[in-house]
Every structure is written in C-alpha cells, then in structure tokens.
Length: 306
Image (cartoon, rainbow, N blue to C red; front, side):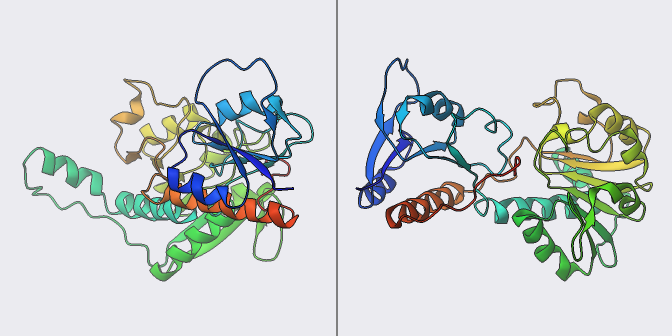
C-alpha cells in the first residue's frame, strides 16, 4: 500500500507533484475547525506552522510520524498523540545557522555594529575602534550536534582552539558538568544545545560569572537557556559581550536595556532564514517519504528532547 502523507497548503506545487509520485498526498488547510476523522495518514508535515499540524494529528488515522521543519522541537515534544514519532529537521539548518554564528562572532569582535552606526549617521569614524581577530582564540561550543559540527568546520580555518561541551563526556567532548571550568579561558562561547528541562537556565548567574572578562556569548539556540537578567547585568557591567539570535522574552521588549547596550548584537531569530531553507526542508520530507515507501525507519527521530 502506498503511504499516505498530510502536508500544509503552503507546500509549493512542485513539491506536491514530486511527493505525489511516491505517496497519496493530502493537503490540510492553515485554519478551520476539525471535528471528525480526516482519514488515513502515515506522516504529517508540520511545515513552518507546526501548531496547526499538532491540532490535526489526533484526527488522522494510523498516524506514525510527525515531521517538523525546525531543528528545535521544544514546542512539540510532549504534545503528540501516543504512538507518533517526532522527526526533527537536523541537517536542514546546519549551513545557515553556522554561517550566522561565524558572522556574529566576526562582527562582534571587529566592532562592526559601531561602524554601521557611523555609516547611518553619515559620519566617518575618526577614532579607530580596535577589535580582535580570531587567530589563537578559544571557542567553547556548548552543543556538538550537526550544527555544532558545522560551526566548528567553519571556525577552524581561522586558527581557533575549539573546546566541545555536551550532555555526556566522550572522546574530545567535556560533559556539561564541567561547563564552568571550560568557560574560564573562553574568548567566545557558542550556545547550540536544544531547550530541554535540563538545559533551561543552564547559563545562570554563577555560570555567566565563570566567563572571563570581555568574552563573547553567542546564543543561536533558545533564549531560555540563559538567565536573561544575569546576562543583562553582566553586559551592563562591561564583563561580557553578547550576540543573540534568540532572547527571553522573545521578542525582546521595547526599552529593554540590551537594545542600547554597548557590545551587543541582536537579530530577530533569523539565523536559519536563508532562501534555500524551504528547499532543504522539502528535500528532507521527500527522502523521508522514500523511506516510508521502502518500509525503512525514518531518520532524525527525536529521543529525550533531542
């Protein structure tokens, strides 16, 4: 029997046609009440609006898989019907997020934001703003999954020393229990772990205090991994710099002191937003459906929130 899949109405026509060669494709609308069974389905694609797919999942008979377009799954874990396996989008966002991290590090260490301010004011910055290069810098990667490996591959040519930290110790990787010790010599700290009950508040006040003065904290994961108040105090005291694609709360409220604080770079949760993002996500969906047709298990199954 051909697999049956449910995809959002935002799916490009070309992707609908391509998937239709492999499976029976059903399109679900972006809104509207659902009061009865929708029919059979092996897989539902969450797309860019997984909340709608979560709403519909209990109404699909025989549903086995929920495929999201996001790498982080904290808003989905625990909200699926029993027996449904969640698959994340590991591999889809590696390039884009890794490039954002490198961009943020270089822009922060070379004080690019201050020069951009001068440009917008139409003024040549007469005083030299001396920054730092990356050669010989120590970079701590907190999280060494697919995105962490992509970041490392892009940073190594700059001549950095990489220190890896993850949940569990293994060859070349320190356990998170040793995080404070790892931070003591770090010039740059990059947060790439997913948000789970264990990682929430991981960077609390004592952990932030363990960072050396002038270090750069880069968060491309989730805002709630960091104690926002403690981070803000450290920034305002001039102890650390930050480059943030995520905040807590998000969006950062008007008037928040981080907006105008020196040594701060903020983007609005766009690290993965590149033109090829959707193309890569739909390619993952296609490959997952191919596995369904062959009776093979899918990839990227989420275990323990990862």
